[in-house]
Length: 374
Image (cartoon, rainbow, N blue to C red):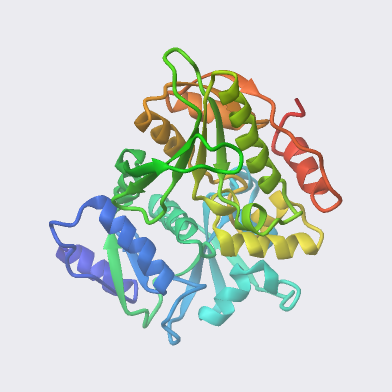
């Protein structure tokens, strides 16, 4: 770390790590930053201030007059101007009349506390001169599954984990994903199935593919991208259609195999459209207050859609699959896979009946997220 950077870190009110080991790869630095945020430790992205996560922070004496939040959350707090509101997941820097500590910062960050603490402020959105670093911090918070909010340059925040903006791109590069193992796995839909497990050297999530039927030359597989849903897939939640969609996809592939074809189910470990299990539960709580699924994510300051579709393309690449028939009603999945180099030669309808608990959810996906009816 140069003298100017040391001076800047000191000015920001916390100490950045003196050196990052030369042997540490960019992706590993980012991975350690995600781990640091989960543990409540500060991070320092080169060129920006030290940032302490509001939700998990373990420095009870830390305080700052500034907070970093997403524009989506700033809109809820009526702090975003018209330009910022056009980019709802851009970072926003706010200043308070009094210093924020972790407790008062959480009242700003967590919408479940809005009804308990309806009067907030006065706050002011101020100019942000380190936007790339701020955007990277919000993305790291999403990956860590915590609320996207930080105390900025707080006093008494402790030592910070150092990294660079460019580390994030290396961390999220799907090229790190490889096949770890595979095995025969008869399932209720088909006894002729194989499970393929994938692992990245930098990411703790372990994705799997279920291949149903025998692969035949020239036969384009029926493919379903299914993002993990603990509540729907395992617990039988009626708030979504995930469990029935998963079951129907497997049976459709089993039927395909009986006709001489084959199918691939990609099970992606990205709960809650990529916002994580805890934040998905927070969104459910907001839905109980009357907000739809997209509004709930916005109030949390999180993206409406944060799934990593290039990972799915990489999984198919490792299976030597470059053309598919995709089971989906979501045109964004088709576009995302095609952008990642997968030839989607057909979109196969995949829709199930609504129930009283998920009717609004399905209507929101149709009316607000552009899902198709057929």
